[in-house]
Image 1 (spheres, rainbow, N blue to C red):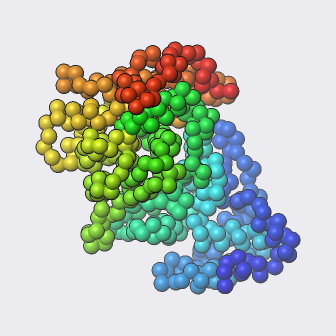
Image 2 (cartoon, one colour):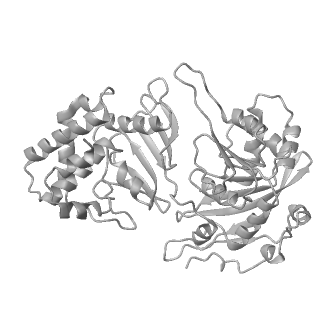
Image 3 (cartoon, rainbow, N blue to C red):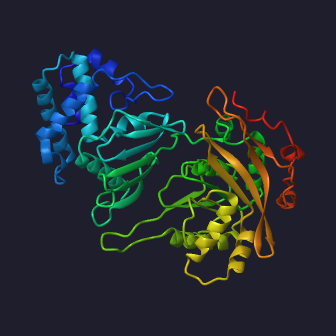
Length: 470
């Protein structure tokens, strides 16, 4: 019998059940008040935690037996939970009892206290360490919550359930894994003994509806002028790198840049875990695969990049370059796959170029530094760099052109830079992305494609007006 059918037998009247089903998620998602304030504390939280602990104590190791089917698990949890609530003798109405049954059963049988955070559109990242309080990120800032996993075995079962859905595995022989939820959210998990304080789980959420150019302009990530210039660069098939630190919005910006690619072009995306949300129909999505328990069957990003060259792509998009695949990507950019894009972790455009050179050396081919730099200078045209500012916002801080080589050094010039201002009373930094006034060398290339850059995109403007928070 399905869980919702068993819950309906708990005695709540039909009208109350309908009212309960329309409520937003509650309970596990209660967030402790932070600097910005938080939601009200759930009055049933103490009863819920006590009932959950009693349930785990009654079930013991039976809850985590791998041979138990989902149907058997549902039946056992419901029966034991009903007995726990009877024994607790808490003064609960029928509606409150139904709500507790739904919340606790969801915790045990689903993704536990993660369920409500995953349903909350304001939460962008979820961080779990053993049985400690769960941390979440909202609007670029971290908050501790009142939710936690009661037992490490429960957290481990949730991790195993997540990774099994996408054909990955995690155990003592392979205690680290990168995976994704069915909605595309990125998941990283680490088990003991590598994680000293218990299983560790980090979930990076992505919007169910991919953000577009108007959204990034509204969020002050890019300016309208940069958005228009970026569309010309993508249509003109410039090779681009999106760089920045962890959590700065590189994948989101890569999605937006990819939306400018014409629908008739064939795109091949290559990722460790499929996260990109492209809107085009003529799309091939490739995902790497780790080795199996016998150490066989691994398919790396580099293998996929080389294979993609045989798939007649117009553009190749690599979710993130982090190793020897950098060499294959540069060769693809230099051999007829113009307009390709990727992301790369770096602190600045100059650091990105240096990292790219280092990663080419990781391919295991003994190339002189000058040859690698010449490859980079001829392959990559534009670097778009993102940063997360002190106010928690994610913004493009530099748009830099790679202009060539000079005395053995790759030459760069900034096209747009972020001018920092003061933090206002609203807690947001008054900063704007303004053009430097330099005419990029790629303007000639775009003009040959019939895509002349309007002078207004590169001219000086109001330095603090375009992106001033309203």
